[in-house]
Image (cartoon, rainbow, N blue to C red; front, top):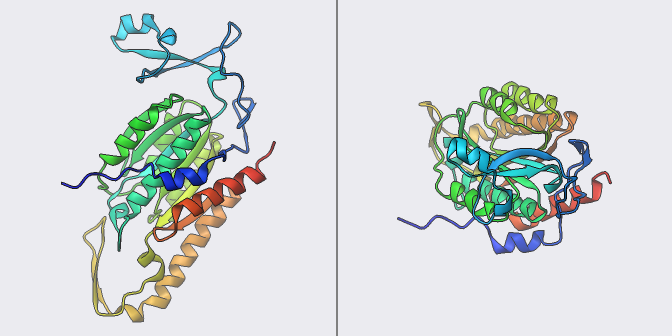
Length: 299
């Protein structure tokens, strides 16, 4: 069995060196991206509990909770972080498609791991949600740098499967998030556009800031097929045996309309939208996006 890929690519991390992923909106009363002192005194207010991770400061263990639940929890304080980030990663079967390496799911995992590393380096809290028809796995937020190991391990051991249900899933996630923050949503978004948009609007209604990464395979964008081809649905039993050259113009037109509508609605919803192909050099694309966002963020 081949070893799972290491999604912390040094080439990508090197490009992100010196950059910050800032939030443009005011989150929980603070201007995100401007971190306060990491030294906690008596004036720091308790915010919430999070599960203990190896490397956490043992001074902040809540022994009272341990006595009741027989589990270790850390007291998290308001000044530990200004930004709560939630990375929502689509693990449905269609994300497993790849005309060549990497697949869409693997490419998306590089995005998720790289941005999680960047946010943790900034002392921000990062949570990971893996979803398909519903929430399949949820890693609670943590500011501990060691949390990156839990995130990458979860990505490495996940297999893309199941159907996508954006409507129910995004509504569920929106209600689960305990604090307003930055939502990074990574998917191919090959689903019902109205369901997707309703879910995004629910997240914005909850006053989250949203960054949408649409990941598509090169073949899905260019449709280079020439010979008679059998096309099979990855999330349904549908299949079509067709002469692709007769379909190419209509297919590309409909795809462009779909992507354009998704981009337009995201921008109207005050959300960032980035479309990436799995053939795009991710180190350049990701660093360019973060740098541009830094330059345009409100101070």
